[in-house]
Amino acid sequence: MRLSQFFLPTLKENPSEAQIVSHRLMLRAGMIRQQAAGIYSWLPLGFRVLKKIEQVVREEQDRFGCQEILMPTIQPADLWRESGRYDDYGKEMLRIRDRSDRDMLYGPTNEEMVTDIFRSSVKSYKQLPQLLYHIQWKFRDEVRPRFGVMRGREFLMKDAYSFDIDYESARRSYNKFFVCYLSTFARLGLKAVPVKADTGPIGGDLSHEFQILAETGESQVYVDPRLLDLDTEARQLGPDDDLAAFVDRVTGLYAAADEMHDPAKCPVPEGELQTRRGIEVGHIFYFGTKYSTPMNATVAGPDGTPRPVEMGSYGIGVSRLAGAIIEASHDEAGIIWPDAVAPFDVGLINLKPGDAACDAAAQDLYQRFHNAGLDPLYDDRDERAGAKFAEMDLIGLPWQVVIGPRGAANGVAEIKRRATGEKIELPLDAVVARIKG
Ligand code: ATP
Ligand code: MG
Image 1 (cartoon, rainbow, N blue to C red):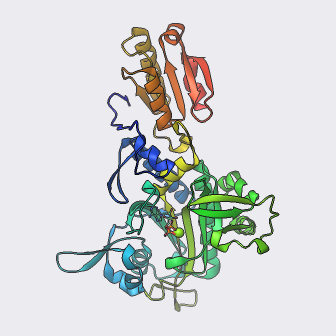
Image 2 (cartoon, rainbow, N blue to C red; image 1 turned 45 degrees about the vertical axis):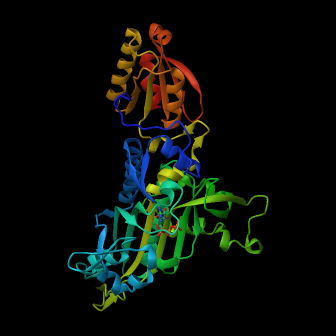
Image 3 (cartoon, rainbow, N blue to C red; image 1 turned 90 degrees about the vertical axis):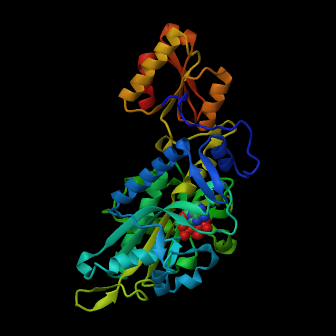
């Protein structure tokens, strides 16, 4: 993509409505545009990031044997009357009436609908377990939408649901998602800590939140430092490994949110305990038969008698993650995208467009990037060098490659790693290899 043609409405000034750094940077980098409180359009740069995050989430769900479906955003109220949540959910639910006066709603979550899909077609324990997920927009009429996409009203969520014949099997499903989540967040370049949680309006018996650590997090968390080192191990585990052993060990380590923290009961010595701010990016629940009993979702067991299916649900805030990643990875100059979610792999800066040697060298590199399967953003605009550097730093691509008249004459380019600021000069034909690592 050429920057001269790219729709990138960046802002020079800090937008006054943005209270936290990720919201500021997303507006300044032209990623999103607010349409109403807590409701955003995603512009090309932001949308690329959102799609990348979604794809990592999807690949990890698939890796653990979860199957993708797509349920609608609009749901009939009757399903929610069956579970009793139509009245319980309160003002956060956006209620709609269609032209025939039927009560509808914009889904804040999908337990009822997926239970309905399940009960209409699965009748025997032999068809279990089933793990289903979708990635779909949700609406919750939050009292205080704020912090940009971090607490929106309309937001993109990955929500998965598990169906099992008994508690032991349901725990195996829960463990899969537990490990899958750690692996997903590690791939996204984040440190995520599982914290035992209240089950809230979803209800149930067992629940963990996944908090990524960043100074601006909404909640205070107290964690055993060993929880900060699980990335590699989680990424190496798959659905057929002994996940229970891993999950038991990890959940045995101390981690508590503010309201649950009890210094008297904390086994980690004060000097080692990490007191950090966290952003909730995922939440998993085991809730047994909370929905299957009232909604009559039963399966026949080995003895032929029908029993309510055991369920769990598992959410990841896909759009929240775009903001959360920036909270965890930025500096004064702008965003620093982890490689896995960067909107482009490399920014190519031509310092003197119109100069034959610069144009030729930049064009040559642009082509080499494409040939190597890299996605470049080529700044071919006739602007001041300083402005170009500042904009490239702001949008945070992992690599910058600079071509100027001196370099073009000598057949070299300057490469900068955005995360470290480290710069080196390389011959033009060595640039791709360096970036591909
Ligand atoms: P929170 O405690 O932050 O309000 P929640 O516990 O109500 O979230 P869940 O029902 O657990 O949210 O939803 C699953 C995930 O969806 C959350 O972990 C979070 O990442 C994301 N999410 C929830 N509410 C919002 C929102 N208003 N805007 C953006 N993402 C959200
Ligand atoms: Mg939650």
